[in-house]
Image 1 (cartoon, rainbow, N blue to C red):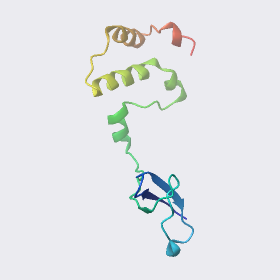
Image 2 (image 1 turned 180 degrees about the vertical axis):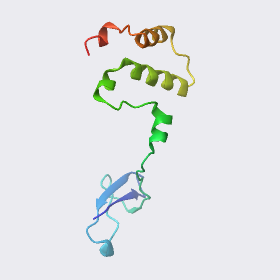
Image 3 (image 1 turned 90 degrees about the vertical axis):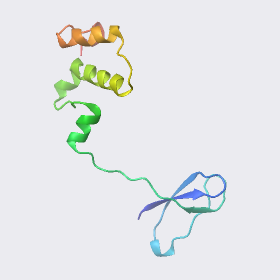
Image 4 (image 1 turned 90 degrees about the horizontal axis):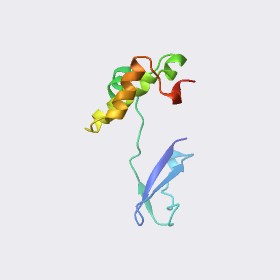
Length: 111
């Protein structure tokens, strides 16, 4: 039983409907304004390869211990600033470099 999306011809908002019988499919009224709807092209999901995830987000933690590794946060912050074409503030650069050397900020020392 698929869920189909319909676009309202009046308010242009989406209405999602569970269709129990495809053969008897009829466009439902808009859930927002009650107007007439037409079938919309729905979005879909796709699987990203590990390489694609690495390109977009950097190295992902593989073990529970790595989730507590502040270097992961530093890599993520550096990548985000680079993606947006922004200069990393000097204070952030200093904290990231110190974490890589083993000197952790007070906020994460107890993790």
